[in-house]
Length: 412
Image (tube, rainbow, N blue to C red; front, side, top):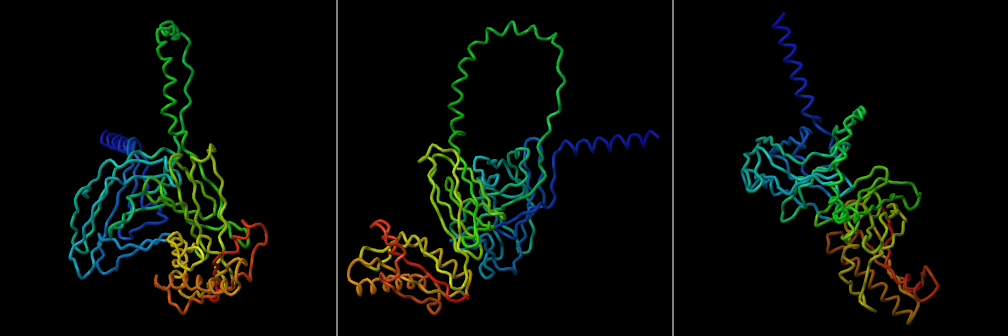
């Protein structure tokens, strides 16, 4: 009996230890990752840390995989060597890695230490080997049950290990109701008048001002034709880091810092993407609303290229046009069966024939750029209409809208 009682007590102690250790999520759901050969096996939450158990698998026969991003070319991970060049992989974990709450840049949790992987030098791994390693971070705030693991931006041929939308168990803590204490112990306030120097506390709002500089950008991404919400991916740069938000419902919310300048890029499969800028410091508002309408890619659809610029009265493309043109390059690369007609337009001021020729040359310049970026010329037709198809006949400022470049999807 004593032995059984001892065993039962020992089991209860173990259970108590496990309970106090914190929340454990085995094989958490990850919505997206940049490196398929690195897996998150478990996430533990203790009183002080977020502990992430990861596994690297060197699968030599597989080709390096890529993580596509809007308007960015995929980058192979140099930590997986080409089959012909190396017999070993080299891995490490960047100590600048941190955890984020998606869409809230002020909610970040710093890296503390790692086990079984280096953070300053490269560690060699033989082909076919598996490495289990652990990363310790600051403790996620209770209630955050989805977070991003962000190692950094891909650069110099290295692709960082980033995981987006990691789902774990991390419920809000319920504060136990405290019983009211007897009033008998209240005489001590008599001593507190001497604490008047605390009047200096008003200085603390100066620290809080940094939080006050944060604002929120929110809105919904819609199908421009049906006005129905669509799932989309929004990327932006904050403090040198490229961050992403994915929304299956189309609704999004982003925390933005008042001292930053932002460029947001919006991408949805089957739609022509867009971008917009935001400088929170230009406004006293702490909340910004920005609904976004994307045009679906379908045969016969005419889509304006909004940021195409040429030298005055010439057909030479200016560098400011490249970002918009690269977006079109990405669309045509992602959809190799799509064929388009690039259409150039001018206003109706000046010689009719010269305007017609200038619009044709500008359309040809756009086509040539796409071809230089690897799009087959047979998929692109170029045509100029001069001033024959105006979209407005108002003031001089409004007539500037007639000087434009569009493309029409001729085949899917």
